[in-house]
Image (cartoon, rainbow, N blue to C red):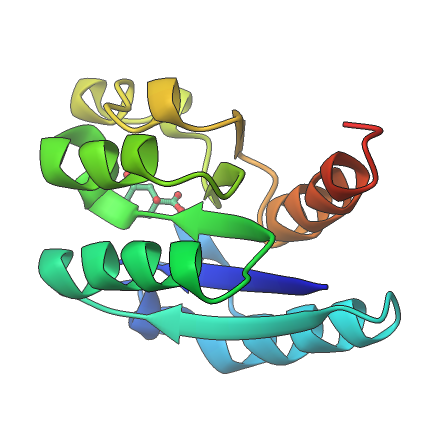
Length: 147
Ligand code: DQA
């Protein structure tokens, strides 16, 4: 199996950026953890982060063509307003779970809306890095027809 871990803008700053909100662990640690988790389930986790909307869209399109079986996606602030990313998610067949590290519902009003969630299988918020692991397990279940 093959799963894509996709992180959007400013998530390259994990560990340095507002650690009270997003924790002290870095993006590199997250990616290494997820690769190791994948390996223990014979699943290749490929990782990509970009601060650019178009690059995220291109990656969603290419995942649709390269045999990727599931996508774990934290779109960062694009979550709240990018119809282009929502259309990309709606336009691909690969099952996708939206993840947010922080509890967006306990924060500013503008973070309460996701324009992407309607096109995703589901959304996990507020559980820190554990949300990515839960999304991984959910995608494995979906692949096995137990989702
Ligand atoms: C985030 C929440 C977003 O509102 C914010 O813009 C981020 C990170 C999260 O993981 O909690 O960049 O997606």
